[in-house]
Image 1 (cartoon, rainbow, N blue to C red):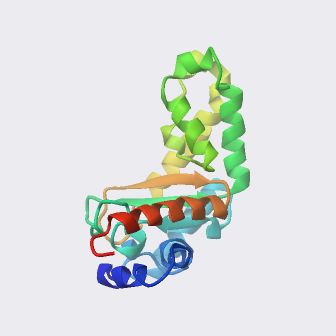
Image 2: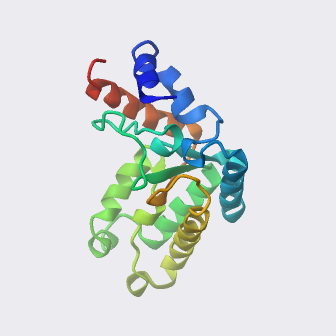
Length: 204
């Protein structure tokens, strides 16, 4: 789908119908340049490393379509300085990270004073059902062994995404990842973004 075709589509269908191309359709993402086998290898490697199903792994945004759906970017093309945005949808993995984070740094004093502003931001993210693991900053010197499960998870997450970053065919900057608890949480995030995009696209 081209940006022009997407403009025509967004002018004629609801945001819920746009979830198909932006989230649900199981097509080979743009960044793999029709190389379906590489796409399958990409998500199978992530799935194996994280202990989840391959169907839990999706590429979204410009790496998926070839142009950005971020509000205010006017469907900007994917370029070799763009990131490949991966989402993982898995309640068990999400809950594991959430609980280990609570075990390490329950969001009340003294933890709130020790970790800085990122903890408040993560509380806001959790309300909408997603976590960006690498945005979590726990200091082993402060939290000791309680931090280990979170740091171990984040290390595995980071190493997995770095390793699969070699697979997309089109040149890109990096592979970034976000963890959602359920598909509905992912849908709600995208519905909110699509509504904002609709308001910012010229001529829509």
